[in-house]
Length: 244
Ligand SMILES: [Zn+2]
Image (cartoon, rainbow, N blue to C red; front, top):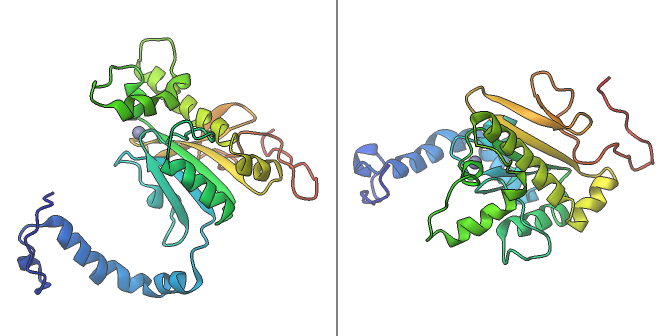
């Protein structure tokens, strides 16, 4: 897909786009998608956004948060990075957009759900077992956020799958170091969801705190309740687990 300009900007028919595929897609959004959802967008502008879910996902182009969750405009507060990693709350990783997004989503938007979503064939997880190019200073340091998930084994497909899942749990644990997250999870106001999307199967596996395993969404009894169990509701009632 070419990024170079080619259109005059005066003519909206595709012949004037000069093979600029991105420009054509921008025009399609306006002409095809937007009219169907115009009122929703305008309501979201008038009333402000009130998303209920913070979605922290890997940047991988094959991971499609809106399609996975069936979400439309205004529903997901979305942050993506290499590996779906959560930097530490203490700021030791410098200025980081993911940390800022977590604080904003929890304190200002008051989301009720935080999803951490990794996936199969994740390049970030694979890179934990490989040399990173010397020039990639930032990437090498960033990958440190997943290192505790790596296994002392040869990275077979099975080991990589397990590492991908372990990395998701590791990020959930790091999320709990954010005081505003921990308070709300303990109070039952936020639920944490650890997901692993198997791209080739179209199946998301959700982390089950009780069993410590990832369970396919097609047979799971919940979309995630991690990392702490049992949950205590506002009135002190302990929620029972749905699993036998
Ligand atoms: Zn990835």
